[in-house]
Image 1 (cartoon, rainbow over the protein chains, first blue to last red):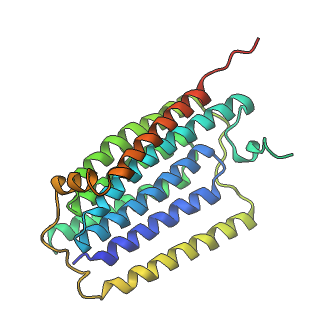
Image 2: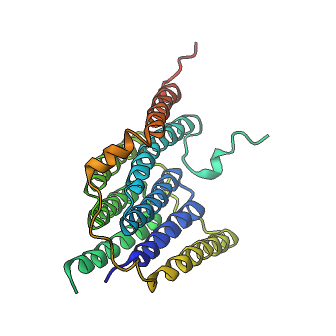
Image 3: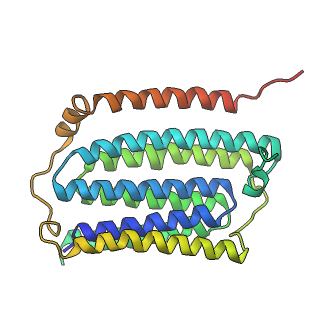
Length: 100
Length: 168
């Protein structure tokens, strides 16, 4: 029987993979994708809690998280495009424009 | 073994495999395709948790709109210089350490739930779309309206950032 714990462990694993992607990759696009993975893991945990505790509030929160994540992806990708225009690169080490 | 258990393990396998592919593929376009698979399997898990509305939203917004955005940016940038995993050993070590810490921390919390009575079986009654809408437009009205503010700020910000400014 699949319980709350199973979903939480799956969510923890996906979150960890996303965090590893953020820490290990240099390609900014893949880092953004890893952030999306982490957000999805959090959403999965919220829905699992919501289902097993019988509270619909979790679904409302996930709805709002999805909207904010979409906005975040749009702004992040616009920043990537702008930096690519200036630097001709999407590698993180080339993003140190603000460094004095 | 009932259908729900089989579905859970199949989707878990698919999601884990796709997530590993997202962070290990060299090219961004391949990672994006793997991410689509991962997002759709998360939608399947939502459906298993009897949240059909969010499963549909996940497919439309995430696997649809957000991923199209990613594809467009990958097309704009083109096949840029490909760089794989960062290979400096200290960084890799720190990343693995932080990852292990995250996983053990959350998994320990989850493990305490497994034997606990009341968390093994889900309650039969669970609200559908009507209850979500009821909560969204009464108790959570302010956060709901604030998301529209977030979206308008994001739209204006993206237009300002992405517009090519003509310099004389």
